[in-house]
Image (cartoon, rainbow, N blue to C red):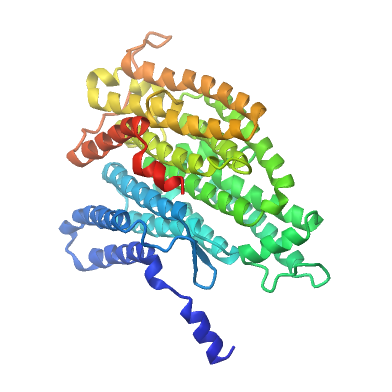
Length: 502
């Protein structure tokens, strides 16, 4: 490679365009440096520095939301900046801030390293931001593996807990399997797209645009079809779609509560950002294959998630399996995006509503969990609203939004997705989704009923529960803001709706 070629490649490296990711990376390194130079008694302030640093990044992102040249390819086509991609940057920073707030509660109850946890969360968040902007299969795989390796560590972070170590091992095995499927699919696409005997041959075979051009020129290639299905299977693992959801209950239960929240919200959102990018920028010439596959996954995911959640008494398993059903609703939006202009914005709006509702619930869970983070039963919530009206109200708002009860943000998210499905004439899937909403109301309101009414146990014995953590000022502000935003977003979609409609 000559000097002129290197200079041409270097000219496409727009480092200023990825300043939020660089800022999070520098902040992550700064936390480790502070741990080395500060006296031990000052280490308790490092989590607050991590949170304040992320709030500064979030404020700068919001102030310069339209300054990223939407639609511009950077780093020689590795990344593509779009308005939804910019919105997902905001999404991941908000998720990271809330995970760090929850981690301050959880880590205080256990003898575990603290600074390293916040460092990994920052690195994973930066990788998710790059993942949502990926425009090249090499970039996709590297960013995805960075996220996955970070979660391997976070899921098994409580090393003294057997359920946590078991969850970490299962997530490691399932993550390796999903990465293998994804990589095998990418290799098949790379190989077939580089075949000189076929029309539309790609020069490199890894760029989204090149693969899309090849698929357009070869609309029914068998190897390309197999590669597409394998890539979709790899992504389906990440979002927890049926039949690739079997890792979710055990991993969600065993992981520390902040990590469970991170997996349930940010990891799922990153998976759907990738799926939408692949569908519309790469696989759309094969919509005849992708739409039926995703439709089948959506229907099975909604049915399985809701029916499996009905029998759960451990709240972390319940929220995990109900999250499977939410993945089905989001898949419905992805399928509808093939022919509905509303669908893409509806999916992203649903993700923001899901973020608010989920973190409201996880925030309450973090206050009620004891030293054994995996032991969180519905019985522990008996009389919560009487003992702590604030936590009871936040829980009701979060669960009500997840159930899709008006006028909360979750209702509007489901409404937009259902309207998009109706526009796309997906009547059978829409009927299954409405049935799923009805079923979900049963188990979500069973949880609310337990919190607001002291329902006696069948054996008449009082429930034993861990000591509840008092609500601190920072947690109260965060949970109050989340609950308020959930209500306000249900009435007024405002700037968020305008961003996601572009």
